[in-house]
Amino acid sequence: VSEPVRTCVGCGARVPQRGLLRFVAVAGGLALDAGRRAPGRGAYLHPEPACWQAFVRRRGAVRSLRATPGPEQRTRLVAALAAAGEAVAR
Ligand SMILES: [Zn+2]
Image (cartoon, rainbow, N blue to C red):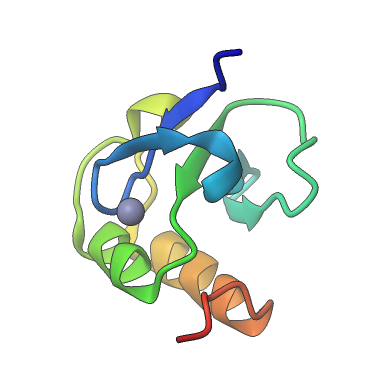
């Protein structure tokens, strides 16, 4: 059985979707899609602060969103991820 594979927009690795956090573009920003059921285009990140920070540092379009989130939008998403306790405990 093949699993859906998605690209982490932080580190660029292609991995099974279930190992990633989904987020979607919403009006004016980015929103964590904890249930993975929000409509529209989603993008994915590892549950790893290092990947979130890489995403914040990146510039340019997020291809899977067909959007170019600004730095504030990226920072807000990462803050929401941290607040939701999505980081992998180490
Ligand atoms: Zn990653």
